[in-house]
Image 1 (cartoon, helix red, strand yellow):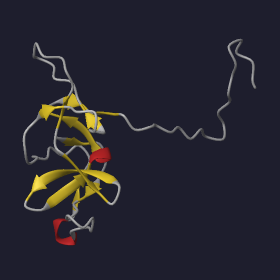
Image 2 (cartoon, one colour; image 1 turned 90 degrees about the horizontal axis):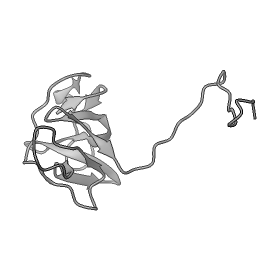
Image 3 (cartoon, rainbow, N blue to C red; image 1 turned 135 degrees about the horizontal axis):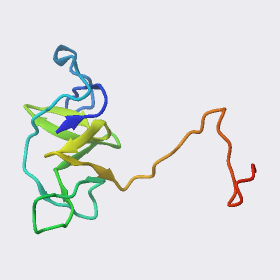
Length: 115
């Protein structure tokens, strides 16, 4: 899996493991477990590319204190929101996505008039 932002490594109690340091953005990280068909309870999933099966796939996800994590093995976890690709495929989410507009952005209607 590839990381889209710098991330910390956590234990099963959702505490940072300080001696592990920070995993850097763009780092290729090996994960624990295997890919399975995505279920309705999976928050993050991806689509396999070179396969006749186009159903979404997912890694085992762990919810710790309301946040979703992927296991790295050895009791180590990374936040799922910090992962951009799994097996070279982009990761999608079913969670809502929020956009916070900057101060210099304007909202336009269908006639391109400022609202």
